[in-house]
Amino acid sequence: MNKSVLAFFAHPDDAEILCAGTLSLLNKAGYAIHIATIGNGDKGTATHDKKEIIKIRRAEAIKAAGILEGSYHCLEIEDVFILYDRESIEKASSLVRKIQPSIVFTHSPDDYMLDHEISSKIVQTGCFSAGMKNMPVPEKPFGPVPYLYYTDPVESKDKFGNRIKPGFFVDISAEIETKEEMLASHASQRDWLMSHHKVDEYLLAMKAAARSRGRESGSEYAEGFRQHLGHGFPQDNILIEILGKEKITLLNQTK
Image 1: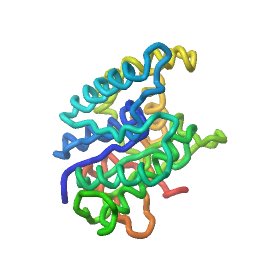
Image 2: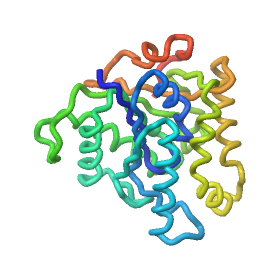
Image 3: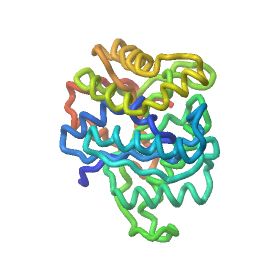
Image 4: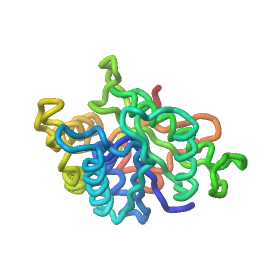
C-alpha cells in the first residue's frame, strides 16, 4: 500500500480545522501528508485584493502542511464558484493520480456551505475515476480506489441544525497542540472571521469542537469521521489497523 494521505478540501484551513489531529497521527505512523484545496482562498478577506489574499493564503497553507513535513496543492478555482463540472472533476482526478494516496479525507456531504458540499462530491468522483482508463487527464490510471473518509461538518451539524453522528472517532488528545499550531498558521483567517462573522474564536472554536467530540468518545480531544462505503470503495476501516484500536471509538455508520 502506498503510504500517502490526501486531505482534499474546499479552502485553505479546512483540513486544519477538521482533521489535522488525525493527519498528525498518520504522519507519525510513517505516512506522507498532502493537503489540497479546490478553492484558492480568494474570498477569505475583508481587506486584501484578490491577488494579495491568494498569495497570503497559499503561503499560510504551505506553512501549515510543512509542520507535518507535508505538501500543499491547489486546483486554483475561485471560492464560491466551486462547481461539480468537468473542469473540477478532471483536476481532482489528475491530482489523485499524481499523489496516488491510499487514504483520502474530505468534507462531509452535509455542511453549512455549498463550497464544502460540492467539494465532497468532487473528491468522491476524483477518487472513483482515478482508475478509469479513458478519463481525459494525462496521468496514468491509479488503483485501487483509495479509502475515503468524510470529516465532521463545521460545528458537527448539517444546514438544518441537526447534529451529525460520526461512524467513529479518532482520539487526537496527544496531537491537539500540533493541530492548533497548524491552524494558527492561517493568521489571515482570524482577521477575516472577526470582520465577517463578528467573532474572535478561531482557535478556541476548533478546540471546543474537538473537546466536544472528545467527551462523546471518552477522550480529551477527538475528531469524528464517516467512511464512504459505496460500491467500489474499500469496506474495511484501515485507520484501525494503522492507528490501533486504542485510538478509535466505533459507532454505527450513519448517513
